[in-house]
Length: 587
Image: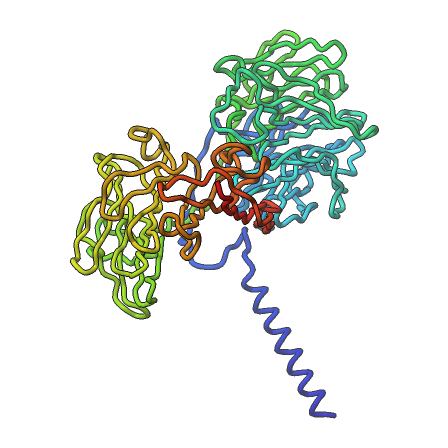
C-alpha cells in the first residue's frame, strides 16, 4: 500500500512538473521568449496615421491611439501623455460614461479582445476572453455596466464578417445581439444611443452577398443600420450614393455623425434623426476603407463634445475639431514622444539560382498496368520511375510543359498533353519501345485528360473553351473528342463533359471500349429529349456513363438505371454527387 501511495505521488509530481513546463512555453505578447536583439526606437511626432479619438464626458480630455499605444491630453492640445504602451497592439480607447475608465482593444492576451483600465492607465484587465472569434470597437452602455463590441467571424475565403455582442464589464461569455447575414460582408463600428435602446452600426450591403474587390463606392457599399434592444429588430437608417460608415450618435441622441464617400473624397456628415436631413460638415478626412476589408472599422473612431456642438475627428494626419453649426474647423495640435522596441528583422538566405531543386509536390501520378512503373508531373514535365524505389528520370527531353499522362492497356505507350505559350497545346503519345514522342493532334488548342481505349487504337480527350490563363483563341467547338491513337481525323462526341475514361468489357458490337464514363457538371447537363438523356434536375459533379456506337456517336436513347449517392464534403455541408449509369436501348 505504501508503495502504491509513493507511486501515485511521483506520478502527480511528474504531471505537475510537466504542466508547469508547458506553462513556461506559453507565448507572452508583452515579453516574448527567445532572442530578439531589441533596439529602442525613440522619436517625436506631431502627426499620425489612423488615429481613433474619443472625448471625455466632461469635455476636457481626449484619448487617442498611435502606433498601437494609447495616449491622453487636454482637448486644447499639447503634449500627449502615454497611459498604455508596450509590445501589445492596443487601440480604440473609449471613455466610460462616468469618465473614470477607458475601454480599448488589445492583443496582449494573444488575440484581439476588449479590455478596461483606469484613465491613468492603471488596473488594466481583460473583459472578453475570446481565442478565435475576436473582438474590437467596443462602446459603453449608458449605465457603464456593459460593453457592446463587434465580434469577428472568418471563413475559408474571406477575412470575415461581424456580429454585435454585449458583455458585462466583469467578464463572461457575452450575449449575441445581431446575426451576420453571410461569411464575407462585414458589420462593424457600434455606437449606442444615450438611452441605451439603439445600437447603430455600419454594414456592407453591396449586391451579390459576398466580398468583391471591384466595388463602386459612389453607388453604395456600406450603410448605417440600428438594432433596437427593446424590440429586437434591425432597421436601415442611412444609405444611398456614397454609402455611410462609422456612425457616432450625439450625446443628446438627436443627431448621428457618419462618413460618406463623395466622388473621390471621404466627407464627414451629420444626419438629423428627427427630420432625416443630412449635412456635410468637413471634407478634410483621409480616405475611408469601404472597398477593402475593414476588420477594425471602415474609418477610425471619433466623438462629439458633450455640448453637442463639435466633433473631434482624425484626418490627414491631424486631429480636428469641427463646429457642426458653422462648419469651422480647428486643428488640435499634439506631440507624442513615441518609445518603441524594434526587433531585428529575421532573414533567410535565398539563392538566386540552385543547380538542384528538391521537388516538394508531384501531380497526375499514374501507375502502369503491370504496377511496375510510375509516371507523374513535377516542375512542368513528366517523369517516370521504377516502383517501388527507382530514381525518377525525364520521360522526354522536350521543352514544352507536359501534364496529365495516361497509360495504354499494354503499358507500352503514354498519352499526355503539352503546353507552349506560342504554339499552345497538343496531345502527344510517347512510345516506350522506341523512346520517341509524337504529336497526334494537328490543330492548336487547350487539350486535357487524354485516355486510351482498351485496345489502344483510340484516344478520347477534352478540348476546353478557354480561360484567363491560357487565353480564348483556338478554342472553338469545345467538348469531348475521339482520335486515332496514331493520329488523324478527330471526331466530336459531345460538346459537354470532362474527364472521359473508357470502361473495358462493356457493350458488344460497339466502338472498342464500349462504355465511356464522363463527368458532366450540372450546369451543362442536357434536358430530356436531347442527345444525352439525363435527369432534368442534376447537381454539381454528377458522373454519368454513356454508350458509343461504331461511329463514335452516343446512342440515341439512354436509360438511367442507378440513382444518386450523396457524399459529405468538408466545409460546405452536403456535397451532392451522383453516380449515374445509362444503358443502351436498341434503336
